[in-house]
Length: 118
Image (cartoon, rainbow, N blue to C red):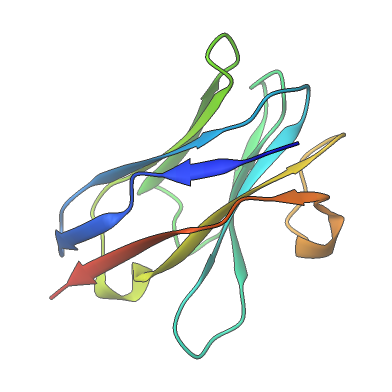
């Protein structure tokens, strides 16, 4: 499974970005992020069917994960961005349900950098 994340960039605080991850196959998908000097952390995840999604507390109400299986693409809509959202964002895939645990994902994309200026 090849994952390709895109959509990162520089945005001012309060702004929005939408990340995309191209992924084929019937996989639950997750987004993780790693800020400079910190460990990678869970952001959001969605089942293959799109019927269930979960979020880290730090992004609830601001970020939305969705998917378009006809386009083999998963999205992360990020609104009301804060400087602390600055990180490299990774998409990941696993064959079953959603998980917040990094080690339970089998496949990883290369990451896309999001920088939020204050």
